[in-house]
Length: 503
Image (cartoon, rainbow, N blue to C red; front, side):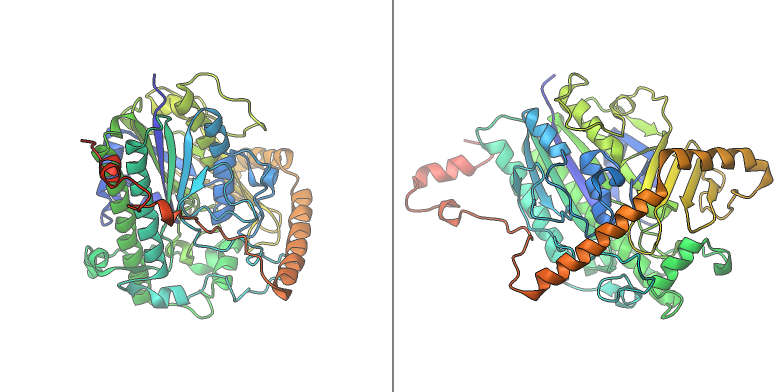
């Protein structure tokens, strides 16, 4: 089989629960619905680490964050870590990135031959958490200002960014079709929406009746687990607080921006159709993590509860069967899956490191998979000790040395309201999970590494602030002297050469 092209479309902070594709009665995501109807919808995919940078680094590397030291949103992504893009280059692919990937450090490519845009967030050590202190970091922690700002606007920096990301990705798809290079392509189009702040353009806001926006089901806040209470404290939900109308506005804006992201999916698919590349392109749509959006009285991400940690995962294209897959999996499985797509299940290139995930290509093509589990690690803000998750079948176990354990039957209790960890009827299961955590992770050693990294990065950031700044932020280059029509070109060649279809 000819190597297919691969288009990866990534949202930021999109929980599958808030899409029509996964059954939400209000949210409209017709483009994602259409992909799922002709492809495979995975119903239990998790972010390995529910925070932007660690989620993306584990996604690209196929390795847990503890293996690559991707602790938080200011952890450097080492240039020595092989990524999905590196391996695809070895397999003959052109690799292109348009949009956000939150790379921290001087390497801003990590295997991509080109980046079409800058990133939206800083590439330095500014956002380093501080486990030596429990105090809120006001400069960059999420807060209730986000909910107060929710609503309509004609332009925001996030809208500007995604318009650039989408335009650059569409233009690159045309370039792939009209240039002479016949190698397959891997294009990642990574958008910032529906990430907060929940501010949408009027045409997307007006897609929804404000009174029909559903409200979160909030339990008695006194019954929350300690980590959910920590999140509420640090985002000021229980000090500054918020009103019901701010909740409705925020969810309205989130739904509107989800539809905006979905529209970009549709535009990219249409561009593949226009350039006659759709039939030979595998399309993958996912997100880096979800958003609690008021559930459990918390917002944003940073926990292993369902709306924070679960992500949409839809595949469509040549070889992909129509259906749904219930097997538990995670972003750690994307790299091996993509390698199987690129090799038609054949020989992979030599791997630089051992991968922790498994290929989902057998499931995607209509086969079966005996594996029904995944693992997660979180070492970002709102903690003082590492947090671990095991999801196996219908069970989810959450462990943090500073907190009581949590055990949920996610099938019977999808909102995770009943912690079964101390239930005598589940004592044997809880003991087995607890023993597995001790065997799988050395929590004390990981904590020592996190603390040492944080302390080092705080010093480095202070030093970089003390003198002239040499920025790591990616600056896309453009060769304006050779764009469009210039006097050194043959004017009668430039038009036909850039036209598609060609005359």
